[in-house]
Length: 99
Image (cartoon, rainbow, N blue to C red; front, side, top):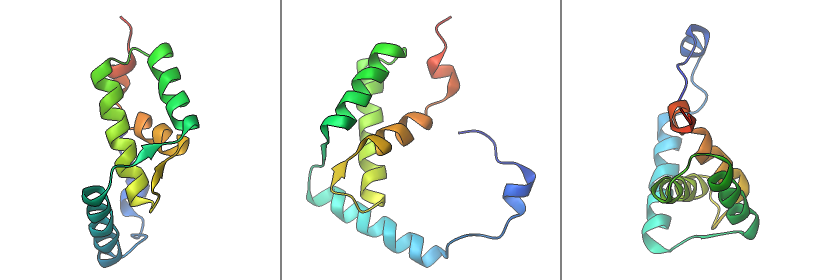
């Protein structure tokens, strides 16, 4: 993740800790109770990422796990393409160097 700017760090918090903690607890419970499936669009985006980026099988699996967590935090029972995109955005830029 990129470093936060000084203005971002000085800005007032957007959401109380209690509501974040409650959302995280719900997401953990959801992740433990079921296995989320990825939509066809999400799988297609992930396949494109593997084809276009230096993303290994392990990197693909990790990105899907992160996307599943993102979906759970959003309250979604299905991993959508926006969850995959967010998960890929969390990868370090050095992960995409082809040198």
